[in-house]
Image (cartoon, rainbow, N blue to C red; front, side, top):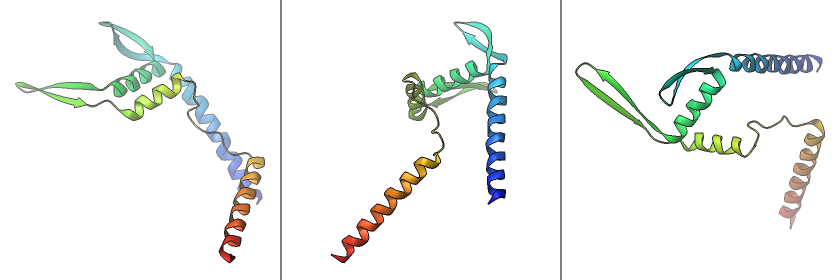
Length: 123
């Protein structure tokens, strides 16, 4: 049992370390975007947010190949639209882990439900 707790603790610590590193990288101002026809350097997080908006609204890629051009139409993405709306409303992106006290309540509810169904079978 001690090894499982240590492994779980190590996974949690690694997750926190990764989240911290991602947050630091997101703040780096190294990405070039065009805003109103002007090239501007923005943070990685801002550039990523712009990509999410672009996908939510839909866009067309135009590429030059040889003598002609090719257009690829990307339809608006409902998943990206939902993500943006949830963030604008202040909804959390990920759920929190279930705490031990919540687990006990869930187990009790499941146990009660199973007992009820078994009793219903006898009738």
